[in-house]
Image 1: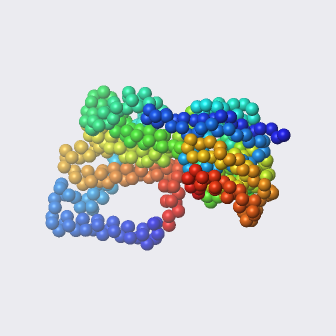
Image 2: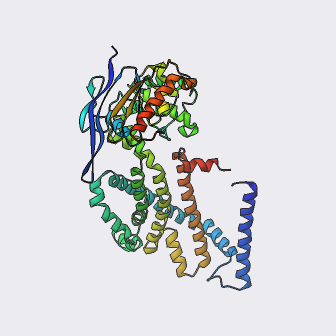
Image 3: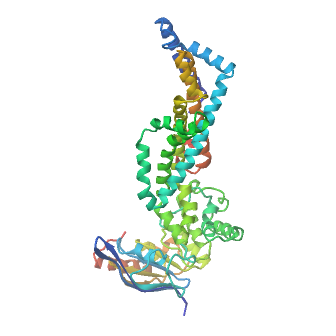
Length: 245
Length: 259
């Protein structure tokens, strides 16, 4: 039995908005095993971002609890790597300095992590770019920089990104990944398991296991397993009148 | 833009306008105490520099301006940081600063001369007071305009507020700060000259006033020319600093990309 990396138990979230209280998440529960790649899909406005903020420790849930390797998430944690949908880089820092940002924030010795950073840059094909600035890179290259920044201090999970590069990094580094997206094909292509969310207030309504061998090439998308999973999730979306992207 | 052809065109245009000015003044026999021809302004300029009169006063005005600029920049920057980081300071102090700014500060110059004397100090204070406000506002806006996603990233990394300030907000505010300095350095020159007009023993502003009493209009034109070159040079200095500091900013990058 694999150990649990992320566990979400009965998490609910209500926002106070002009006197009225709006439910964003209603009773979310799921587990992500160590080294598992789990994708969460849901229509826009289903509370995906709220869930993300709770897991990053940026927002305390109204009810329930999220745990990372057994300890409750009570604030921002240094063993979680964050990757945003768009590459969030600092233009005044070189590529290497951007990757080392978490190291600087934590006040760790730079020389020890510099080796790791250079290895990671080589892993994503950015060897020789370490002294360049982000604006000298293409969008895809910038996204790869932001992914490996999330891996520099050996965290549990980089999240929310729209890049197939992730599969390769994940296979090589064996991280636990929780990937949040609104794209069904992308979720099925990347994940071992896809959790489907309902519209607001968000809750998990389905848990779809994707039995596709790894590493997956793009032609995995033409298999019946891929088609079956996408169809099942899309049917879930349509049942509640949601639209998928 | 700086091709040989364009430089030649610029110089040619300057020569043509100077010749036109000279021609019109001579043709219409305009007295030199109303509008002097460029030839007389050149002579006045030459004499002023040869006698050492202009360099001495130029150095004095430059010193006042630079010191006033530095003092005003320090004041503007610190106030900007204070107002941007504290809601209380913004609520309780900022309205007074705006009130002070709404006052035409040139009108304060006589008071400042009474308080700080006829020497260097009153001009430095005057220059600083005129110069500080745009930098303060720009610093404030710059610090507050940090990108949301970048702030979220820093928070997710468990960065402290002071780390967010030093590693994100401050470098992110630099384009605004540099734009503020651009304006402030010219305002400092204005402040220094106004201070000299009210009461001074040295400086180009004082020189203009004494020339005015003797109807030396050619002299005044020549000093005005020095002042505009001085302003241009100060501005250029900031531009060089800006390119150094903001090598990563689109405003600088696109300029260096341009032909």
